[in-house]
Length: 283
Image (cartoon, rainbow, N blue to C red; front, top):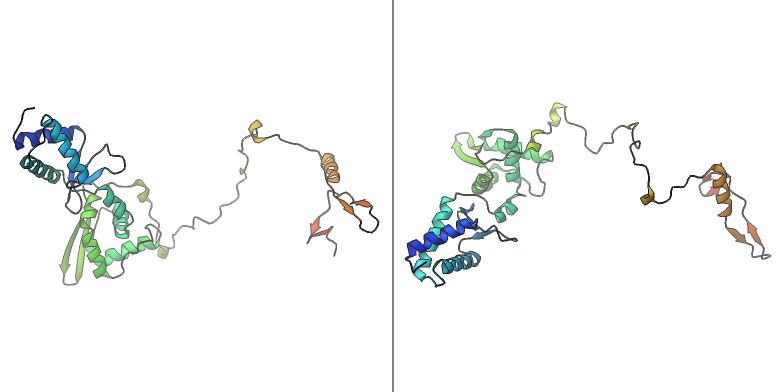
């Protein structure tokens, strides 16, 4: 490639970057972001990061026949990269996904819209519904949903770009009787099949038994165990007489300090029982 102007160099570099699988988009804070799929530890990088600037300069150097491009050419290239990010749309970066996965409001909105098409009503009603989901264990208890509507509204407003990344549209309006909000599914909303089963309210008397309650005894318990093989060690089958003989051989000898004689304890019978540490349950 001959020495070219900034426009043709930018077109060449952008074509090579796309050919290598790079993706250009805006994160939830409207910051230009580039995804480099070949990076193992971190793939999403700010467009103005040294990681991506070094990559863009290397590609531009190769595209310009191993000649360093001019500063004006690189400035135009970075302008084209930022514009390409704007065209790529808005979504969550990897770092943002990790930061927002544990947010109780984000979890609550996803859980609610997993079973409902939308919510359109008073903000205080949405707070009650999401807190009910959290009380029933459907949401993480690490981050509690605010009980005050004004605090909840401020947090929800800040999460609007984050929720959009998860496929949830958020709208607010104020009427005479208070604050209203609307949550709707967007085209990129991903519904979870596991969310189909919603725990019923305890107020209707249909709440299920706790999962920790023991189940009834089944007559088939233990009937499907595999037969032991050589890997389990030798299997021993002993008759009652053999067991009695082994017990007698294992009885310890008690030494008498008075006369030095060894006295052997009488053999245990198979019907002897030990009660409170005494033989035969003697009082």
